[in-house]
Length: 403
Ligand SMILES: *Cc1c(COP(=O)(O)O)cnc(C)c1O
Image (cartoon, rainbow, N blue to C red; front, side, top):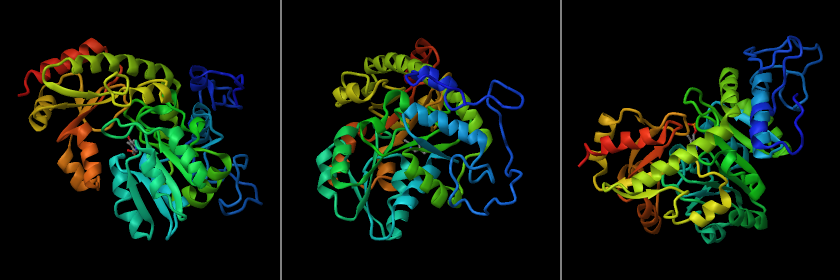
């Protein structure tokens, strides 16, 4: 494997970390090994149980050399010992929940989180006999209050989709540590360039690789990043058996995307700040929520916890549905589409009534806190790496068509 100096910085790690030139051909860029199986020694065991990172390759659902290189690169960027990749962010989240939780256990989860993560913990997880408390994690006390002897996992997401509300990871990690409970953090919106939750005391980091880490909107993937012992067990006992592993081709694409993650994040932040300021001054825009703006209610926390404010923001207008129609029809550069973290800018309207019906099960107090950010609906804008002036002009002409 490429030897990096121990103090190599993120831009160098992103390019070289985890990769190994091919020992036979001496190819400088990583090989794509699509093989599902490997010619084995006669004493190879027919189970993933007991295999380690150093074991010979047996079957790609257990381990694969291309996936391994990608996992090592991401682990290095997060400052972690290990990483296990999955077919999607949701496959990573599902594997984590299935690995850690058993009937009678208790999960403390952010009341606002990525839609499918919220939805799977509304019904499927409780149906397995697991108790779920959904709390506003921007208030650490609300986590402390629900911790019980059977609490096994605290699940945070910061910044939280779609309202860009932040969670103070140091504060939550302290509570988790005192209670002896595992803390998992979905850090997809931040990426390791902005926030490294393990340094702040978290145990596991969750990523949708489909977003910033892959960065080009052409490959789905997910990952769990954390300690070697925990993830080695998770890989053997859950990931390799539940089977939602990433395709080596997707791992190869995502690894190539990761090489430019630090410079893309710099560009996302720079461009997003210009777009956020433009939107904040636009007469049709009522509110912009971007961690990099002084107007973000947790701007201080953002400055402490985020080395980069990323390209994600939310904004509100008076008539959301009509504006959504105008943007979908008239935007030329920005795509009206779900997903985020791509080099292309993407925008999508998220009506509050829909989210409360399908996704977020909120108490009255929680709903008020959500509406405080989102009102009746919010546009989620993922600012890409196009020219900021072109993006502002595109938004300006499309907003001109809105009521
Ligand atoms: C997209 C996303 C996920 C799910 O990832 P997929 O790759 O779509 O399965 C999870 N969490 C966050 C914050 C996301 O943005």
